Amino acid sequence: MTTRIDYGAIINEIFEAVKNEENTGEVAQYIPELSGVDPEKFGVYLTTLYGKGFGTGDWETRFSIQSISKVLSLSLAYSILGDKIWERVGVEPSGTPFNSLIQLETDNGIPRNPLINGGALVICDMLISELKDAPIDFLAFVRKLSGNPDLEYSAGIARSEKSVGYRNIALCNFIKSYGNIRNEPDKVLDFYFNMCSLEMNCRELTQTFMYLVDTHHVTSNSATLLSMSQTKRLNALMQTCGFYDESGEFSFKVGLPGKSGVGGGIVAIHPENYCIAVWSPKLNLKGNSYRGMKFLELFTTRTELSIF
Ligand SMILES: NC(=O)CC[C@H](N)C(=O)O
Image (cartoon, rainbow, N blue to C red; front, side, top):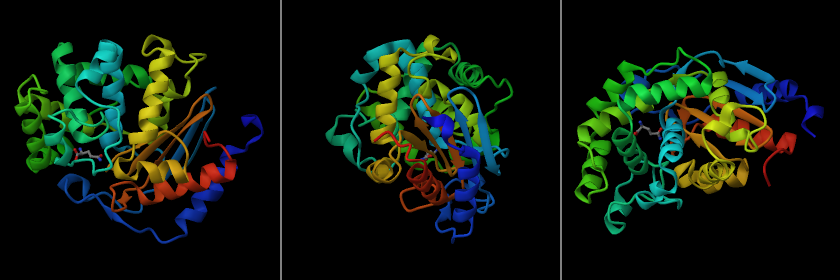
């Protein structure tokens, strides 16, 4: 089915159309180091299941992947601990912003899902307990997954976020008060800020996420990471929770499992078919890339390749 689609031509055409429209929204301001990123950056890359790649615009420029990293830490924790992780974090969409504290009190410190900040902090806590040195081991894991040994955290961005990280510090301490953070909050937060500061370009993102495209384990080394059922579950979580309180909208308009980050990146998966990454730093009011959402909506409409 997919071989007849000229991905390269379609990507270029939609890229030009979106680029010629007004670029609305704002670059994330609350992390000082991120606020200086050029708002006009715009890149796209698609990798197919069998490794063909198509890129346009600024796809070679690395950016801060921020919350997209939450899928990677979740995958690692899931591969180590299996279904035990669901005792400490839920699988329901939160319907609230990514850094919201509001449900945690009624939910006794169990975050609604692992893709909001509270849930990701609990996953970081699990990894600290399980790994010898979580920041180092996690980076090694991502490098292996991506096949790219020179991926790095951005020390500057991690430091910058930590210096104003009041919300995440509050979240981590609040969850700790319910006993759902086992390690020292400072240690958990340091790992979390490092994890979010990981930098990749659009192509590297698609290559890293191929394990979620290859749900039947036909090409990549994904079989060594997660079972087929676990892979499907991760895609289900991205479908329902990947865009915070805009997850319904993303499903409605794009129709793919995906994950966004406040650096302006979005990665989306068409299981058994392709992975696509878009980067454009201006965010809408829900914290998702304005052009990224627009591009993907047009892309799945044009190719008729959403999962629905
Ligand atoms: N949505 C995001 O990408 C948020 C990640 C960011 N590091 C934060 O914790 O606020």
